[in-house]
Amino acid sequence: MAYLISTELITSKIFVLRGKKIMLDRDLALLYSVTTKRLNEQVRRNMKRFPGDFMFQLTKTEKNELVAICDRFDSMKHSTVLPYAFTEQGVAMLSSVLNSERAIMVNIQIMRAFIQLKRLLLTNVDLRRKIEEMEKKYDKQFAIVFQAIKQLLEPPPAKPKPRIGFR
Image (cartoon, rainbow, N blue to C red; front, side, top):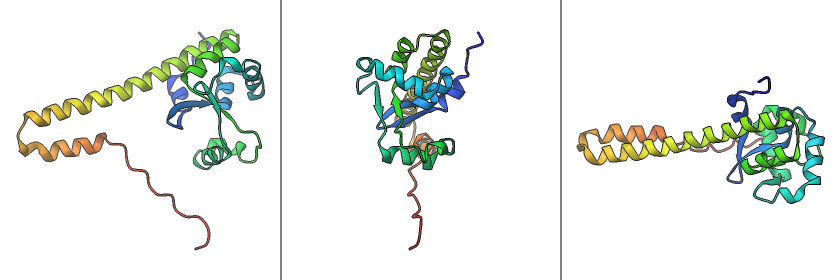
């Protein structure tokens, strides 16, 4: 199985955008060993297979935010082409559009990565529920401990972006 790609590599290419877990066309093309142009060409030929909840095109603002946040997207900075974002269902549909042995194997690995992310989120919810049950069960003397654990489970608050330029 020379086509296996680590799930860590794949999960590093999954973003949350518009409230959905997505992968960009350029990352998928890299994983499938095709050019982004070829991947998008196949998608455009089969647009009926990709409704809005499977795939969408980024806005210029979203593209600029990605370029600002991630160094690996520097090559997109001056591009006039807006990338496509594929949800989990859109990635699954890509295997039928890109009909190659590598596309099938890579697609299996991508699906495993999405499942792994879902499991991580579910275990976090289960852990929170168990802690709350324990909190009800035990005395008030452990309230501080439970509060500290809850804070560790919470995602860190978004930091305000510093203003750039002259003030």
